Amino acid sequence: MSLKRLIFMAMCTTVLFVQEQILMIVPNVQFTTLLIVLYASLFKFRESVAIIVIYIILDNMYMSSFHPLYTPPMFIAWLTIPVVYHTVLRKTKNEISLALFGLFFGFYYGWVFIPFRMIEFGITDFWPYLMLDLPFEIIMAISNFVTILWLFKPLSTTLETEMRSLETSYGYRDVKS
Amino acid sequence: MRKIVLSIGVIITMIGLFLLIIDFSPYDDSDAEGTITIIVVDINGHRVIEDTHAFTDEDTLFDILSNHYNIDYRSMRVPYYQDGKITQSMSRAILSIGTVETDFEQSFLKIYLHTPIVDDEDHIIDYDVRVSHVGVDHLPLKDAFVYEFRVEGVWGGGS
Image: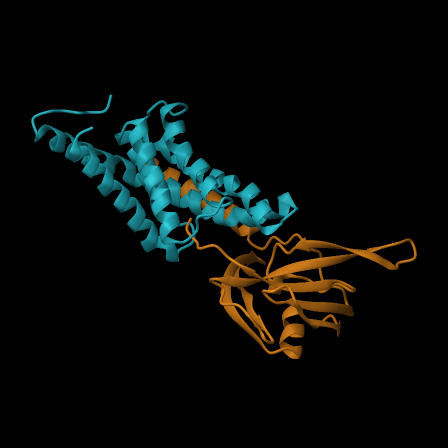
């Protein structure tokens, strides 16, 4: 992997982390899903996994939230994106398919946390918890759908151009296979 | 054009679903009258308060707390759909009761609902203790129930 590509990945991770901290004042409204879908489409599988792992570690360090019942669901949920992108979604660039995936992911993200939260807070009733969590999942689903539908294409085009010029400016190409 | 229609369609559907479930409560309505017990447990697990109070159909759990104890709380407005219009309900998080204080960042008051289990002759033989799914403003007042406020620590935040 070239140093420039590594720096590009670091910059992408920074954007991912900073936007989430800025948007933390609005519950579940963020560009995180859009950016991770975007990175999954731009980078190789292992590179997007590396970005996500670093982002989660940074987020948990910054928020002092490392915990066996909090950090693992974050890994499970966010790492699902590159896995699904490279398997079920078959590396599609179709913004509608990706937006629909984002819509579903808004709910999935909440569901992944439910068993861990139930253990953490000693909650024994599943259905009330699921129902009470739905409003937050809906906010995230709308946020994911709208941002991916409208921003994925322009961001993808811009970043692909930038990555190409970055890699060719050093006289070699390390375009993802 | 397709994207606009799709966006509007999804947003309207999701907002509809949101408004349908925003005021969901897993609990029944309050009883007309009765008595409840308030328990407050500090960070060390000591019962600082354990009192029984009578209530009528005009009372709420918040009223009982504010009438009998020195409390501090944080207000949040939650929108919900009722009678054909979007309105707002007050949702309050209790920060302190008497000398037991939390900051809602490092610690909070977790509410446990003790539901009485009765025998054939309506005598209470035990309590079913469960964590409340809702805040103080959405908990009904039920005769012979115990409302326990226990200080709990929290881990950071993040999303």
